[in-house]
Amino acid sequence: METQSNKIPVLIVAALLAALVLTSLACTIGGLTLNKNSATIDINFTQDQVNTLFQKAAAQNADSSNQLLDNVTGAELHDGFVRLVGTTKGSDGSEVNGSFDTSFTAENNALKAQIIAVNIPGVDMTDPRIVKMNQQMADVLSKSVSESNGEVLFKDASVKEGSFHLTIQVNIPTK
Image 1 (cartoon, helix red, strand yellow):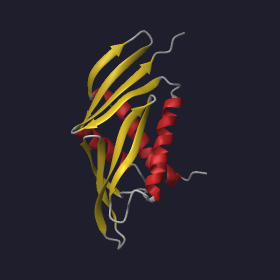
Image 2 (cartoon, helix red, strand yellow):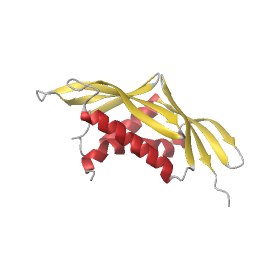
Image 3 (cartoon, rainbow, N blue to C red):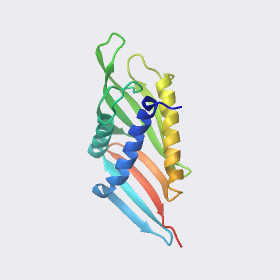
Image 4 (spheres, rainbow, N blue to C red):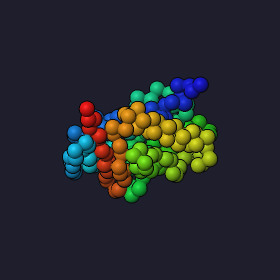
């Protein structure tokens, strides 16, 4: 049985993905290719848009017991990963700065996310929260594709300095 606190990290990723899709009209759409039964869309999100999405998702998190950062103050786009920056409580109870990096790729028509580095005092890559968050992100992202009955496929995901790029294919059901 999963508890609510175990679902919170996944909810942030799911909220990001939902926000990415819902705000795509406000983003730079670099290309739209229409085929007989599908449309392929290139979407580019700016540093500011990604920063806002992660901060809003983190602000909606009511339970921080399973989080790496208690307060997310920003998201930075670097070549190959997104760095979440914020604060958390140190072992002595004081507030300390920290960050962790998450990579995004598209594999087998699904969006993949994985924490690849952590810079938080007292936390390393073997921390149970990181292992759990990686597995939950994989489960939620895989489920999101299967629940769409394969109608939305992630063809490419990449992060470069200042830009988060997605290429999605939307299959158009035929009668």
